[in-house]
Length: 110
Image (cartoon, rainbow, N blue to C red; front, side, top):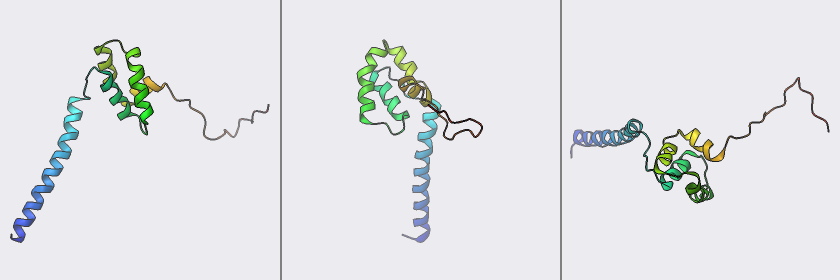
């Protein structure tokens, strides 16, 4: 195989890989999330969205899902939520506390 043929083959391989990578991202953005209308799909969405999720998070989701969602439409509505909203719906809002003390605020003494 000549040098030019080797370079051409390498270029085709790289272009193909980039095409697959870009196509996967574009198709997901255009079509939106996969809506299944099932507890399994809803829990998949939750665990994909929650960073650092554990197996217990998924187990809890699967166990509680039938009590929370009564029909396919409500499950699909959950699956269509943004990741931030999906995690907040399940876990609630995180308590927000100040990381540093405010210089003008006196310390609370008990």
